[in-house]
Image (cartoon, rainbow, N blue to C red; front, side, top):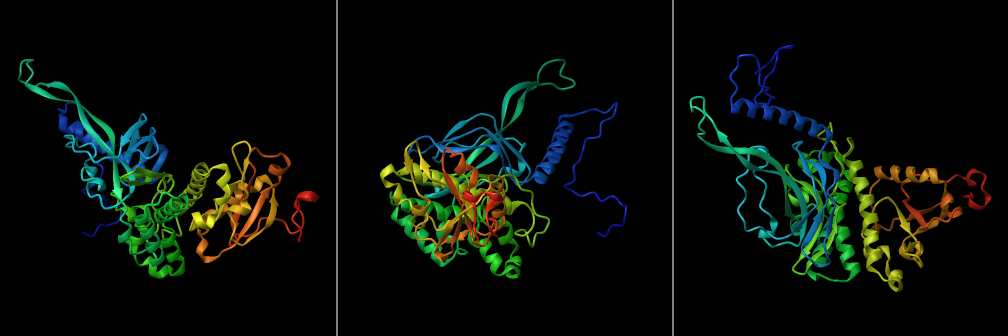
Length: 434
């Protein structure tokens, strides 16, 4: 139907606020309608904020090789704009429940069709742990009618309580045809091998993380943006949601590699994102909006967490085996490399980056370190198989004042240089000479 200017347009899904006035007889249906209206308005605000993890909801295994995880209290928002709140820490056993679901309520009517856990199928070992809203009735109250003379006619439920539920959504890597043939082949080999070798586990974790970060899909867009822009579903659903076919009700919390021997690793930042509203352009979401920056931040944090995990797995004698090219395929465009583990154990960035063409060390002031990391968020991930070189920076103040944990920053050569042409701020001993 064609409308005219200034003519009110009322559609089926508009918010319907109950109109209150003196003398109106209110029923339970009226009050439910008012609750629905308030809920819809909150969801509109939630969609404006964007889907993602607001705070908390950290995931960690309870013990090595177990099947129980701990999820801390926190708040998330799903794609419907629904707030998902976990008030207290919980422990979750990663087994498929044989118990029937609760009777549920209409509080989260859009999310009653959440999928069955992929654990029922048992055909993958790679999962995305998600959180979604849930609700149950609680307590009882008597039911009275206008003509019952004070005698209860029955009982009804007192509260409809909002809660959460967790799910494991499977990532079936052999079905991800949009990945390069090399990536699919390497993934298949690593999954079939089920190796306990740290380098193999690290490579697997790195591949899976960058599937969820959409690294190859973003690279494909940069090579052929007009072809990619025609595929709206690819633009909107790339990365984690495309890999695991998540519903709009679910918010991803962690990537989990789970075998018959228990949890092999948990990687939060592979899938965890801060809230980002949907982009204004549906055709060019990779160029506008805040989603890509949120994913770039996650890629940086994922690498730092991954590196900490590796350093904990190696003994002091074996730290020289921690070499990037044997543990990673993809790196973020910039990151920090610590040169110390514990009190008296040191590692070298030259050992870690051996086999990669790296510059000599350049010095920058501490005020520029944050700028260095932040400007990297607009650049693509580094593919070590492509032979790309790196530039190495040290922070002048960290060297002068002897930082507790010495570090260097590496940067993709695509990022413009930060050092000055001659020497830095008149400091002869920490200068960058032309």
